[in-house]
Structure formats: structure tokens, C-alpha cells
Amino acid sequence: MAESVKIVRTVRDLRKVTAKWRKAGKTVALVPTMGALHAGHISLVRLAKKKADKAVVSIFVNPTQFAPHEDLARYPRDEAGDLEKLAKVGADLVWSPSVEEMYPEGTSTRIEAGSAAADLEGAFRPHHFGGVATVCCKLFNQVTPDFAIFGEKDYQQLAVLRQMVRDLDMPLKLVAAPISREKDGLALSSRNAYLTEAERAIAPALYAAVSAVARKVASGTPIEAATSEARAELTAAGFQKIDYIEVRDAETLVMAAGSGKSFRVLAAVWLGKTRLIDNVAV
Ligand code: PAF
Image (tube, rainbow, N blue to C red; front, side):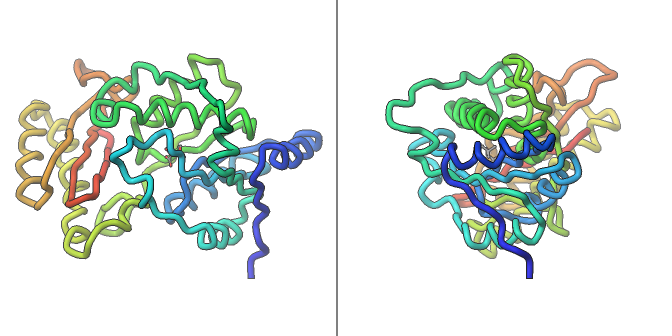
């Protein structure tokens, strides 16, 4: 049986561990998560272990990145299951603060996310990236990692955080990991647990649609035509609402234009009460 993984819940205890590591010349990689860990998260921990001497996983369901009408209260939580998985993969430390430890009374400073947050998710979830950037800034200051590992599933999040690290001269390197998918193409997400059996059967059509747009755009179909065909396909598959399906510059996320650049197809759709996002490279 795997040994249990060490967990700390206060900044003070966290610093005691990381200070020892630093003194011993160890490098540190952080995997920020909101828990309810799946195989995608575990692959990020494996990457963290390759990148640095010590792998820290944070588990914190961050209230500041949810709007009042969003799913904070029902967001899946499974600390015992998470700790078991993290022990098995060999994480060195779990950083799991309470909301009061992360945001002590009187906390009022916030990061304002940069231009990469302006639309797509930002248009539908206007406070989301400010909350993500603020908690990641705090996590980076608390853990002081050499590397922070993020999945490409939240592609815009990665762009926003890259911009923050660059703009604010944060002394760490962000590492992007490819999306982990089910056999039928559905991107792994803690929110997949919300899907009913019927919705789960429809869900892979999102990956099929973004992949079709990528193929069509790569072979010369105008973006507008490729995305409107995808909208029709998604609606026919049973998605009730399409927040967006867009082709953007892969780095800046501005509208895709010109040649010789990398593009990314990004989409957000609704299946019943569940909002799914996905993206692929063109
Ligand atoms: O991607 C997530 O799980 C969250 O947005 C993050 C980066 C852990 C910040 O709360």
C-alpha cells in the first residue's frame, strides 16, 4: 500500500516544509487544483515530479472565481479520495488551506486579469479570471515554486496566468500539459460528474465539433463557415446552448487572422445544467 501523503493546512506549516527543501537545494513544482482529482490531474502531478525534486499539489475550491449563480456549493469534493490518489502517484505535499486561511478577514487586494481575460470565458464569467489570477498569485507566493503545472483544458486560464507571470515578473515557469481525454474524446473534467447518463452520451460531440473546425480551417475553409457548421452539429447533437465556438490566435487569443500563426479552436456549451469547455490546436 502507498504511504500516506503529508498534508498542511496553514501557511505557517507550509513554509516550514518548503524552507527545509530550499535549504537542501531542492526544486519545487506546484500543481494547483480544486480537488475532485481525475486522471488528468494525476498526469499533471507526474509531470511535476519529472520537472522538479518536489511536487506540491494544492487543493482549494476557490470561492472568488465563482459568481453567485455558479456551482461553488455543488462543486465536487472528495478529500479522502484525492489524498489516496496523491499518495499513490507519489506527491510530496498537499497544500489544502481553509477559505479563512486563504482569505483572512479583511483581505481586499485582488489581481486584475490582463487582456487575455477580455472575452470568451471572460464575456460569460466576468469575475472568473480575476479570482483565478488572485488565488494563483497567492498560491505562487505561498509555495514559491520553480514551476507551476496547468492543463491545456483551461486554455484561456493558461493564457491569463502566463500574462500575469510575465507582466508581474513572477519568478517561476508555467508548464502546460496536454488535455487528458476519455476514449470517446470527452476532455476529463471534475464537472463531468454532473452529467446524466443521457448527457454523458452526447458530451463527446463537443470534441468532435472542435476537431472538425480545426480540420476544416487547416484545409482552407473560412473560419465563419467552419464554426457555423459546428454550431449546427452541436445543436443537432443535443447541446441546448452554445456560449461560443471560436478560432483564436493560440498565444494572444485575439481573433485568428493572417498566415504563419498558430490558431486554437475554443468552445463552451451547455448540456442541461452542466457547462462544458474544450479546445484543440488547428
Ligand atoms: O483550474 C483550476 O482548477 C483552478 O482554476 C485553479 C487554477 C486551481 C485556481 O483555483
